[in-house]
Image 1 (cartoon, helix red, strand yellow):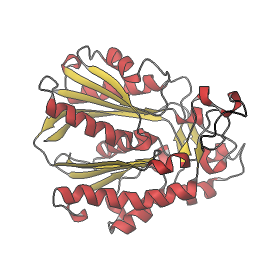
Image 2: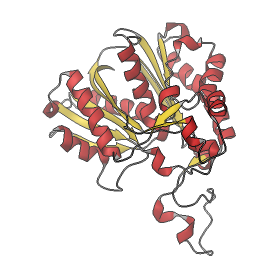
Image 3: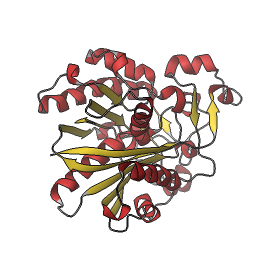
Length: 328
């Protein structure tokens, strides 16, 4: 059983940060950032909480889908930057969108979150006869967790949200989900209550980097090696399940981490870059929201059309990875 994507929506914060803005407080410049990442600017949430951005994206998706909110049976909100430990972001968005008959929960698979959430929603749609439509929301406020003294990481990330309303169908569908927990410490941010500052010296060592408070830590070199390897591998695994090759795909829509990662992975896969949707220049790395934001951009620009075959490929902290091949 496959899925049909009925409607999508996105929300980007009002506040825009260019590369020149970063040059005011960290040793960098526009050329250095563009050359190494492909990023020119990114959005950063000011007054907008994560749930609000997700709500706005969800309302757009519901409107474009032409579905009554009370017909939605499931809300999955994927994020690594929730506003609360509890309640879930999904419960808030369920109420705010009028999806009164939906179950709701959050999912955290970091930058692979949207791929995980869509595949999870598909399984609900397949097994629950009363669940006709699912709402998948991805929203991130990564700027709240950045170490702005670390030029290697703070320049990469941005905030934003996107959402999709899906239903079950008999369309083409294949997926692969995975994780390599041995790399958990390569990209991480502590929860506030477990920060090293509140622990005493006699407490056990957990092996994670001693980053101050809840700030994001990234071992860029090792994450790069993982990403350029797993992107083609996970796609090939998903493609083999349905007897497809890279030539059968109209659009590759990868996680928007770094243009160098995408270019290197595309070369390893043997696929031309003009078949990859890239939005890094405008939004940077928005974690779980990056793939659906890129999809929305491709729809708005007329690139992504109904009936085309697409590959959604995620990779990120965990280390998680996943691919979905489907017909848009």
